[in-house]
Image 1 (cartoon, rainbow, N blue to C red):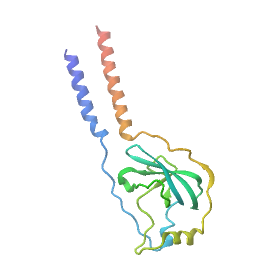
Image 2: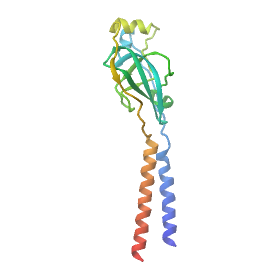
Image 3: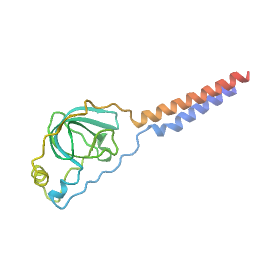
Image 4: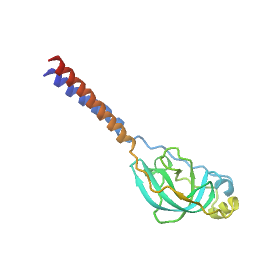
Length: 186
């Protein structure tokens, strides 16, 4: 009887002690830099293209968009590519309107599981400017993307799910070990 009570108290402590690991962490503040000239502003991203988002998936932490690329200005892209962004604006994440063509300034993925990472910060200077004109003055008229690309957006599990699943497996393993020990002792 004492063993059951000890196991129950241990399980409760493990679950309540591990609960903070399952909750979302604080959002990172986002600050956007301003460039001195329009040409400098449009040169910051590693990839610049004109594309239309056609599909979106989300795991609650990260949103991944599938884009049909119509024009490439900087970088080497296929006609279909994926762009990931942190959900809910956390850490400069953003969102895109499906079916609306837009000029994209993206970088190599850092916090996302996609071919590119998009941010809420776009090219900016102290004064407004025509972004399309600045892009074309720096990169020219661009070119058509190569054929192929990402066929569909991948599915991934968020961090909370992975941590929670790991904690559940560990708890079951500990409880199983105690039950095995108890049965062997009898």
